Amino acid sequence: MAAAQMKPIVIIGTGLAGYTVAREFRKLDQETQLVMLSADDAGYYSKPMLSNALAQGKTPDALLLSSAEQMASQLRADIHAYAAVSSIDPETQRIRFNGAEVEYQHLVLALGADPFRLPLQGDAAESVLSVNDRADYARFRSAIEGKDRIVILGGGLIGCEFANDLAASGYQVSVIDIGTHPLGRLVPEEIGMVMRDTLATIGIDWYLGLSVAQVDHATDGIRVTLSNGITLEADAVLSAIGLRPRIALATAAGLTVNRGIVTDQYLTTSSARISALGDCAEVSGLVLPFVMPLMQAARSLAKTLSGNPTPVHYPAMPVVVKTPACPLVISPPAANAEGTWHIETSGAGTQALFSGVDGALLGYALTGTATAHKQRLTKDLPVVLA
Ligand SMILES: Cc1cc2nc3c(=O)[nH]c(=O)nc-3n(C[C@H](O)[C@H](O)[C@H](O)COP(=O)(O)OP(=O)(O)OC[C@H]3O[C@@H](n4cnc5c(N)ncnc54)[C@H](O)[C@@H]3O)c2cc1C
Image (cartoon, rainbow, N blue to C red; front, side, top):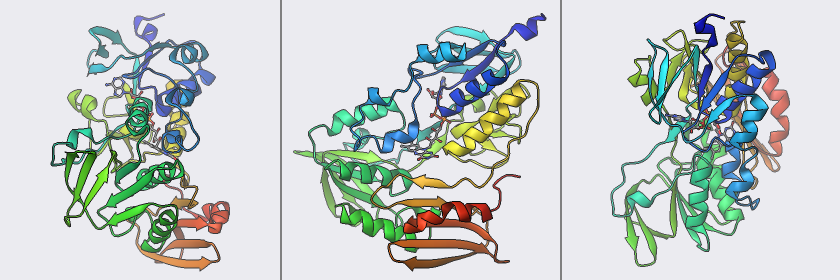
């Protein structure tokens, strides 16, 4: 065997993207050496569970589906936990981590995204938490153990999910969002208001159209001062204002980056032997930080890695929002889509359909009983990437 062929395929990242591409690849190729590196403990878990684990009484350990050792044996991969990669050299096809070096025949970047941090004023700004992995969830649980009052910054998908989960677990929850309704531009105002009013019935207080001026320590916890001067007393503050693709490693390696690590439809970056997928990637201009797109990408990339170059196609990929108090499923129209929302409320359901200038359905948001129309409507939606 030629030396180049003996080098392993290396995957950086053991989130859903990294592990799914490894699993799909092993279905097609049982021989090629696979090396996986992770900055965390490399345990396999389902990240979406983080925002509905509390009400189900799930501890951080209970979220772990398989340990790094179990994954290594399932995938016949060499898995390195706590191995934060510090640099990539596309010229020599080497990466560095913990003072060691690995050569690759092909490198897959499945690096995920970092929670966006607001530059907050005040002496408690550093104590604002975010939950983006199991270790964060463990920290968050211990911070709120035996406490009552939680302030959430951001009323987007993840903010609403945590708000519902915390309120269902007996916490007193306040959500602050700069927009006039929750869920921002993902849904029309009417649907955002349904979410606001329904979550209010389970005790969630909303502070909309406002930002945070200051976060300070107080005698009994944390004081959050809003832009209108109102102050909220809290035991913990959770930030859920969005994620930023992890591009630093790729940038330093000279790869093309934009919002995410830029790839073509084959998930290939500007370096022919490096691919990217999942939350870190910008695939054919699309940054889609959700599970369904990364599953599609992982299946295509596995084929490509096993010698059968395969472009990724995205069908319509609705997202089920995990707010049991207010069932909601959304398939937002493309950012540049022209058209109008049509809203219909019937009984305990509201259906919002976004149609283009030619009348074609381009997106939807369905709450309550209207979520039953998900399958039928999804069939009429255009594909996201042909
Ligand atoms: C609270 C929450 C709820 C969600 N709910 C939903 C939902 O209901 N439906 C849905 O579709 N999506 C949901 N999402 C989004 C979905 O979970 C993500 O799109 C998906 O998990 C991203 O997987 P990933 O593998 O790309 O990234 P990650 O899971 O973040 O994995 C990144 C990996 O890269 C590693 N890494 C990073 N940098 C380095 C480095 N330098 N060296 C070595 N390793 C490194 C990390 O250690 C980690 O192993 C949710 C997200 C959150 C945060």
